[in-house]
Length: 453
Image 1: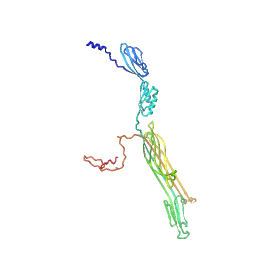
Image 2: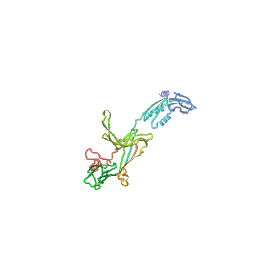
Image 3: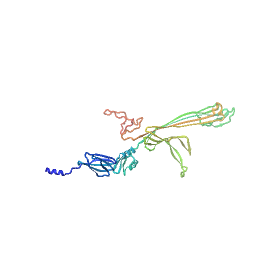
Image 4: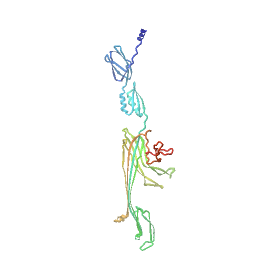
């Protein structure tokens, strides 16, 4: 039995050893060192691999084309070695080219014989098309297996704006109107007509020397701010001597939020009606349209590749000007006093720019006088009237852009500050455990906190 088993074992062929893996790149070589002299070499695919015996114990293997091949080496001692050779392209230069060209994209390349495949993710279709055009000359066929990354929420731009306007006005007026109800037996008045004076309403009888019973009367359209009358002299005067000053300050601090490249607008003010006559079949009819006024801001942000924010800003401040109003068919249409600017500027996040120097100085002076009498020494001032009005307006706009993202669901939400409790709760009470209850909650069912600091 032992002899039969030994005979069967001698007839069973030995299990061949697994081929040793060998990887080469196209155009690269590898030297195999053998422990015994080489007698024969066999290659299954000469188009892919070329093997040459340099010496008796050294074999030079060259990669010629992408693909697979088997290499079998026989030694003089009877030993046999099998190699599974894989020849592939050297993708390191292509990967480096893609990384340098698209530093913000996750693009990789794979090779399969004479074709290349682009794998990974890109942020936009344009990047995939450019990558295909860049790799096309490197292989006979290029397969686009790039995936488009779902767009993330766009970065939002918040613009902190401060409008400051200061309007200073000053006026000075002086004038004298003289009234005579019989001084020197002569009723009358002297006026420069710049300020309203008295006008005679009735004259009764003949005024002469030593005549009695005659009477005169005047009605005053405007007593101005100083009025004096001497009945014994039948002489009176109405004097306008007034000086006034005023300061108007307007401050607005709007905060606007918009996405990249989208315009945002802000308006604080109101609207006033404007009558508009109609034409055509409705000729003669009047419709009313409303015009806006107040503090307005339009801006369009653009995030640049330099991580800065480019802004197109258009602020405007307008107010109703009744001094230049127009009366049309019984309607009084006010005018608008407007100050606007439009500019482009590029800033980093948190940086600010100021638009200043928008000054408006106006001086109006009116002088009226009676010829001849106005040039008398000392007394000539009584026959002159003067009105001076000065106005100076300055507008300053400060803008600060910042990038922001919406609050997540777990972030604390900001609440408005309440100077006083909206619905004050009951005084603190002590429960059965001895702990003080929340004083900001009322005892009524369904009540909630009334304020937060």
